[in-house]
Length: 112
Image 1 (cartoon, rainbow, N blue to C red):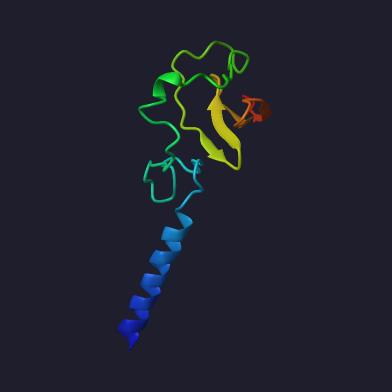
Image 2: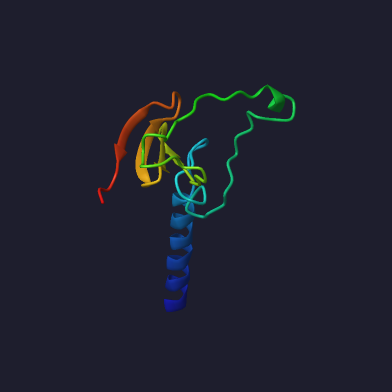
Protein backbone atom coordinates (compact mmCIF):
# COMPACT_ATOMS: atom_id res chain seq x y z
CA UNK A 1 0.00 0.00 0.00
CA UNK A 2 2.76 2.42 0.99
CA UNK A 3 4.76 1.75 -2.20
CA UNK A 4 1.62 2.29 -4.24
CA UNK A 5 1.02 5.70 -2.63
CA UNK A 6 4.61 6.72 -3.25
CA UNK A 7 4.30 5.68 -6.90
CA UNK A 8 1.08 7.68 -7.28
CA UNK A 9 2.72 10.72 -5.64
CA UNK A 10 5.80 10.53 -7.87
CA UNK A 11 3.61 10.02 -10.94
CA UNK A 12 1.42 13.02 -10.11
CA UNK A 13 4.50 15.14 -9.39
CA UNK A 14 5.94 14.21 -12.80
CA UNK A 15 2.69 15.19 -14.52
CA UNK A 16 2.62 18.52 -12.64
CA UNK A 17 6.20 19.35 -13.62
CA UNK A 18 5.57 18.41 -17.26
CA UNK A 19 2.45 20.59 -17.34
CA UNK A 20 4.39 23.57 -15.96
CA UNK A 21 7.17 23.18 -18.51
CA UNK A 22 4.99 23.94 -21.54
CA UNK A 23 5.21 27.49 -22.83
CA UNK A 24 2.55 29.02 -25.01
CA UNK A 25 3.37 28.80 -28.72
CA UNK A 26 5.68 31.62 -29.73
CA UNK A 27 6.98 32.28 -26.22
CA UNK A 28 10.46 31.61 -24.89
CA UNK A 29 9.96 31.79 -21.13
CA UNK A 30 13.23 30.40 -19.78
CA UNK A 31 16.85 30.05 -20.90
CA UNK A 32 16.16 26.66 -22.50
CA UNK A 33 12.81 27.67 -23.98
CA UNK A 34 10.75 25.99 -21.26
CA UNK A 35 11.27 24.40 -17.84
CA UNK A 36 12.20 21.12 -19.51
CA UNK A 37 14.93 23.01 -21.45
CA UNK A 38 13.75 21.55 -24.76
CA UNK A 39 15.04 24.54 -26.81
CA UNK A 40 12.14 23.94 -29.18
CA UNK A 41 9.36 26.09 -30.57
CA UNK A 42 6.54 24.46 -32.56
CA UNK A 43 6.10 27.47 -34.81
CA UNK A 44 5.78 26.68 -38.49
CA UNK A 45 5.26 30.11 -40.06
CA UNK A 46 8.76 30.15 -41.54
CA UNK A 47 9.52 27.40 -44.00
CA UNK A 48 11.73 26.76 -47.03
CA UNK A 49 9.22 28.45 -49.33
CA UNK A 50 9.18 31.83 -47.54
CA UNK A 51 12.58 31.92 -45.82
CA UNK A 52 14.14 34.10 -48.53
CA UNK A 53 11.39 36.70 -48.05
CA UNK A 54 12.15 37.38 -44.37
CA UNK A 55 12.86 40.98 -43.41
CA UNK A 56 14.09 42.65 -40.24
CA UNK A 57 11.01 43.69 -38.23
CA UNK A 58 12.85 46.03 -35.83
CA UNK A 59 16.22 46.70 -34.21
CA UNK A 60 17.06 47.82 -30.70
CA UNK A 61 20.22 49.92 -30.48
CA UNK A 62 22.21 49.63 -27.25
CA UNK A 63 24.72 52.41 -28.00
CA UNK A 64 23.54 54.59 -25.12
CA UNK A 65 23.52 51.77 -22.54
CA UNK A 66 27.10 51.92 -21.35
CA UNK A 67 30.37 53.84 -21.56
CA UNK A 68 31.42 52.15 -24.81
CA UNK A 69 29.77 50.31 -27.71
CA UNK A 70 29.14 46.58 -27.24
CA UNK A 71 30.84 44.62 -30.04
CA UNK A 72 30.43 41.09 -28.70
CA UNK A 73 26.88 41.21 -27.42
CA UNK A 74 25.48 37.81 -26.48
CA UNK A 75 22.14 37.23 -24.82
CA UNK A 76 19.29 34.76 -24.65
CA UNK A 77 16.21 36.97 -24.62
CA UNK A 78 13.00 35.75 -23.03
CA UNK A 79 9.58 36.44 -24.55
CA UNK A 80 6.49 36.33 -22.35
CA UNK A 81 3.07 37.87 -23.05
CA UNK A 82 4.34 39.94 -25.97
CA UNK A 83 7.31 41.39 -24.05
CA UNK A 84 10.96 40.60 -24.83
CA UNK A 85 13.29 40.72 -21.82
CA UNK A 86 17.05 40.91 -22.37
CA UNK A 87 20.29 42.30 -21.08
CA UNK A 88 21.75 45.16 -23.08
CA UNK A 89 24.84 47.32 -23.22
CA UNK A 90 28.22 46.95 -21.55
CA UNK A 91 26.70 47.38 -18.09
CA UNK A 92 24.17 44.62 -18.82
CA UNK A 93 21.10 46.69 -18.14
CA UNK A 94 17.86 44.71 -18.24
CA UNK A 95 15.39 45.93 -20.83
CA UNK A 96 11.78 45.11 -21.62
CA UNK A 97 10.79 45.62 -25.25
CA UNK A 98 7.45 45.41 -27.01
CA UNK A 99 7.84 42.25 -29.12
CA UNK A 100 5.77 43.66 -31.99
CA UNK A 101 7.49 47.05 -32.33
CA UNK A 102 10.82 46.83 -30.47
CA UNK A 103 9.84 49.90 -28.43
CA UNK A 104 11.59 50.19 -25.05
CA UNK A 105 9.00 49.70 -22.30
CA UNK A 106 11.36 49.94 -19.33
CA UNK A 107 15.00 49.50 -18.36
CA UNK A 108 16.79 48.65 -15.13
CA UNK A 109 20.47 49.30 -14.64
CA UNK A 110 22.47 48.71 -11.47
CA UNK A 111 24.60 51.72 -10.59
CA UNK A 112 28.25 51.11 -9.88
